[in-house]
Image 1 (cartoon, rainbow, N blue to C red):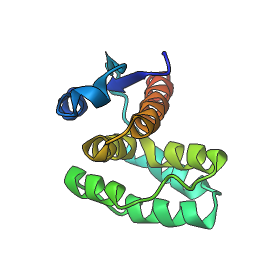
Image 2: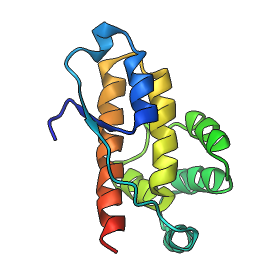
Image 3: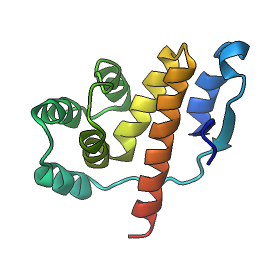
Length: 138
């Protein structure tokens, strides 16, 4: 994947397409074709094994209690992930799983107004893709 590539699902691509032409310029879109979501049991096990920072634990606890997709998108939009250390972020996203990451991506796309925003989203789409690959190999 090149640095300027977003791996998006159809609903995310629809949001990206609404961004300004200036913002979209230089960005490539790849269709995210994998769909290997985690089971409830897998997510519970990851949550139980989580050993991240207190900040990560607060984010994890806040998002873990959310069940429906719209509420998950809302919760994700209220979180500040920018201050997390890379190691904490990796463990947090692994623990949250692909459904929560997708909600974060969706919310971030809706709020995106700079290339820096899209760079962060591109990283999240790559993390989600790697988790999909891992989940599909189990």
